[in-house]
Length: 556
Image (cartoon, rainbow, N blue to C red):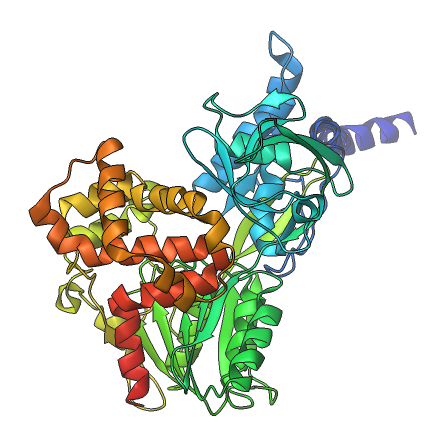
């Protein structure tokens, strides 16, 4: 019997020992992973959570890596490094490094920057409700939000903010971002400011209760003529669609039958807003856009029957800074042969991000899919040469002459698509307009460039408005403002102002740019009094791209 037991041990003993060793290794490895997860989790508030913020739905976040080398390295550093390890700081450095090697639009947002990143998308923030600029190192109020916190307590355009909560902000070369941070704050909280008002010998003291301040993405809408309406959309936020509908209803009430939607300088935003606006132009069941990614199945977005503009002629204006959601809207219009795109080739961002927030207020926006226009083209431009080259692409385009000539653009035949109407369109790098408009150099001069770089038109317009505020405040229309301004005197005054601010008068160069400078100054003056509804109609007279869009739409 003993011999039998000894023989069985000889046969099965090594196998049992091997099994025990394997189990031990597995348990040890599992313990290591659990230990690393525990250490990391405690440093980043135990568990991250996902949230949806109109970029699509996040699939959650796991602290278990696919490669055990990461676990092993973290465990080794956290447990055996000679000094204590600031895991929080490491996390803030490592996450951006990981994302940096993916694509240019996957980003980490630190908690301190989260509110600033999301304000343009949510369409509001909490503050005192003023628009200001830095005039001679002083915060000068340009306008107040109607019925906003500042207007309610009596803040007026032209007031200079001298102190904020006891801190001097005038004449101390404080950055405007720092001043904004001081004026913004939690809704319902007070902020005390002292202002200098023309004609008042002493500083005026105000306590303002912060409130929600709307951020509008439809900058202006107005009728260009009896049939053509114009709308400037600066970004796509949660409120954009509602603003768009209100503007369309107003334009329709004034007789609009054709519309120009200006998306120049519109870098995008929330995709759903662009889809909802595109829906207003398209017939039922027309494809607007679809998205697809490695772990995201294809998702189609179709038009519905609710479109208010299905029978209105439309032109979309774009430039090289129009991106993302702007390109979704333009692509839907172009690929469905619904209207024409006027301007220059757009930026070329065809990636979709989802946002995941962490308990500490930070977040990751991760690219999870690409979007495709109705013909199936991706308009995302290449990013395989790194972020610097990606964002330098616009400069490369400029140097190649693309902003001046359509012929300088090389199309890739492998990315050629055809619309239902037989029009050829291309993917691989932005939306190419149907009507190309080069950069207008008619008014260009070194004098104009220097005046623009120094901000002299804007500064002089505020200076002029300040001197004539009492009279200008009695005016309510563009015509009244233009009739009040004496062109000859205005010209004399701003040349003198420019000269005193470092720009020596050059008669030959000034002659080239005179009309543009004079028009822009008058537009700024009108904006100071009646906001954007004064600015854009005046600038229309020297806006070659808009004039081309008007001619194109009139011919439809």
